[in-house]
Structure formats: structure tokens, C-alpha cells
Length: 91
Picture (tube, rainbow, N blue to C red):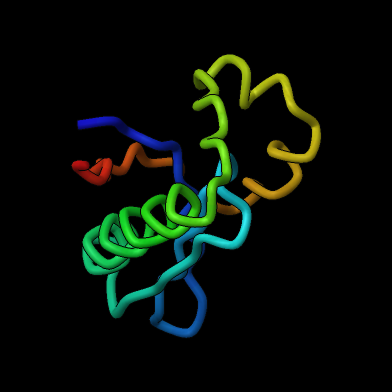
């Protein structure tokens, strides 16, 4: 099962999760753990949609590559970085 880097931001008691390598794939939850669970499902759905639409999946960057990206460093300010498992569709 592949893992994707994700950022969890907390605000007003809610947690949002986004995936730097998958723009547009977002989710949220009542807690960071809930956001991770929901984020995993959302990313699995997002990836399936990309493949169904004939899009190529992005290269999953390493933590070192992400940390070398100025945009990622800016977006990750105040966030918790986690690795989230997701499923690839079976043919």
C-alpha cells in the first residue's frame, strides 16, 4: 500500500488534511486521527478518479524533496506532517 505525505491543519477544534503531491485532494475530521482516516478514503477516491480520467499519477516525493520545496515549507507552517496510506484501484 503506497503512502502519501499529508499536512494536517487544526482550527477551531477541527482538522483539515491536504496532500502536497495531489492538489485538490482534501478532507477533514473532528480530530487529526479522524482526518487521517477520512483523508485516506478521499485520496483513494481521488486517485481512482485520476486514473479513470486517463491522468497520470504524480511522483510521490520523499520527505527530503518536500522539505526542499519552498511552497511546501510555506504551506506546512503550523501543520503536522503525516504519511497516509491509500489504495490503488485494481483492474
